[in-house]
Length: 396
Ligand SMILES: [Zn+2]
Image (cartoon, rainbow, N blue to C red; front, side):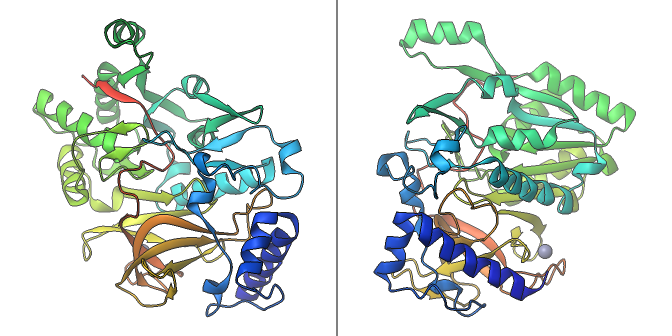
């Protein structure tokens, strides 16, 4: 696909969104945006954007952010996890959901080895449990975005490590009067599965939030007092944020330092840093950015696939576009694909990132901007895709 096609598609999507979404039309009118302007790398930052706060439940704009007659056709809302109880809510029809899944799938394949591996250890509860977590807005169910992501692993042998503990939930209800689900790690399953993978040299991917993995595996490591040799057969995919110690409805009292995580996982499983992939995405945009570990930055470097979208960076105080490298700014995702249902063509997120190169990655050679995640405008608010609950039952 030529760059022109991308920009033609983008200009068309911006114009059509202004035609069938009143909020977006108002955003365009506010800045007297010329909907017929031809787009390129230099004027991306002028495209009117929707701030992340518009998608919040508390803003009560998420229904108006739908395009055309999406609401009538909508099966369910997608909801982000949230520590504050104020999630982002996005309505997507099937064709947009397919684009979103394809974007995640590409990341898992190009930055890791998804399609070459059939065995998966997932730090997540079974989909049957995820399906029970739902809200209802305007008479339509809302599910965690994570529900759609789990579909991507369909057909593989998946070991779900998070389990629902009925007795502990009842005990919690009796002792605290809070009807809160207690879930925890199935330590026996983790132990036996790692043992099986090591003995039979089974190619395996371990995936989900680093927050879950880090704590559980450290406890496991301490209890077992031994390392495993999984060298060539073991890949780790992290995603959904959580490095800063807040993950969806979970707050863990400590931060997971990325270099420490990498080092410990390498030691524990006898693997090298090329086996790690981190995924950066947000509920409000269909884009997903794959990341590999960088020794130079001692951090994950995330890549924006030019075929799928672009990023814009904005000054933290003025929100004016920044074109520099090595300077923190607020991240904006721009894409004409996967946003037929709602005004997601340009979304300003609450993540603060630093672009290290606008053209390509000097380490892996991929084309497109690369960035590192520095922080968040609202640091105490958990966001991202794979939530969950209380870590009380967090024993091996
Ligand atoms: Zn790279």
